[in-house]
Length: 332
Ligand code: NAD
Ligand code: DAU
Image (cartoon, rainbow, N blue to C red; front, side, top):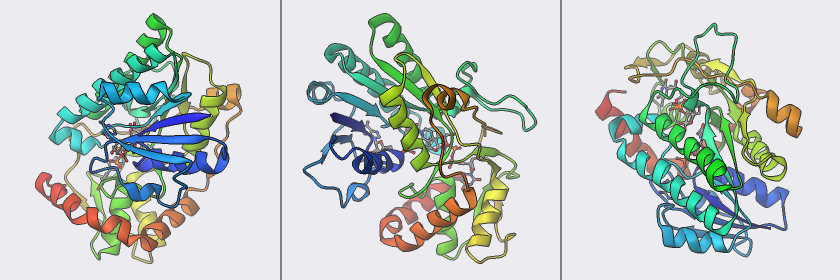
């Protein structure tokens, strides 16, 4: 089996590459990644180059994508501009990569008749009230809030149209917030851990009551492999691990696990249009494909993640000052 992984040098994509490398030792993996600010070759260090090849390139490059599709059995598409705050400052790269990039892959999948799994997000459904008993499921209406989530929603709709109109063999998954190693320090959990490691206070947007449904990235990887191997073409699967926590609880847990006073954080300006709550109903993937998450103890997963950032300062330090300078400019 030959698999092409777009965005495989980013956070979730590289964790998926490591997962496949371990779980499917006879598979050949090609990573296509533009190595934007969010991609890092170091995320693939230690993997045998006989089994894992990195091609540095853009998913919007038709010729390159065409060549790579000709020489693979299946494609898992993680590549994206992924950060909401960046999409509020400069939406354009989100349109290019998330919409045109996905379109380019779909055209290649159509031409070469190749299996494609599209990685998407729960944010395409907008947000929920704190007391809403209904979680997001595969039939929830699309209602994205930010330039990021609207371009992800657009990319999902392209996938659905290419399945229906052209018979492309694609599936989609919409996953909740991931945490784990190799996550860029612009994102919530790594930002707070590294703020503490640098002797500053964690920064909570607004009141901190916003809820995210946390899943360990290993569980996301196992769900994606399950869909790739057992999913039904044309179907969408929600991925989540019942990990709802509000941001204040998460910051307090980080501080506590790092031996600090749990009130030692500061409130900063809220994100414009900030989604209030995400929550996933993952019944379909569990009942139809037999998938179950393994890393359901958030506190222990968070402790491991903190340890990873403590042990890998050389990995995150080069990104940190620039990231904080960007936050300073937007007052968050
Ligand atoms: P990330 O920003 O860490 O990584 C994105 C990767 O894509 C980087 O390696 C980057 O270099 C690459 N990339 C960007 N533009 C490219 C282009 N034009 N051509 C080729 N490569 C390009 O993102 P992530 O958090 O790992 O997210 C991966 C995917 O998972 C995204 O599609 C995202 O929407 C989705 N997702 C993320 C989460 C989350 O919690 N982070 C949750 C659900 C779904
Ligand atoms: O739900 C899935 C989505 O999760 C993915 O599609 C996105 O790619 C991923 O970035 C993530 O989006 P969020 O906007 O939820 O993640 P972020 O890490 O940016 O923020 C998580 C929450 O924490 C959110 O409510 C905003 C808040 N926050 C964030 C930062 C960076 C803070 O309170 N302080 C911060 O410093």
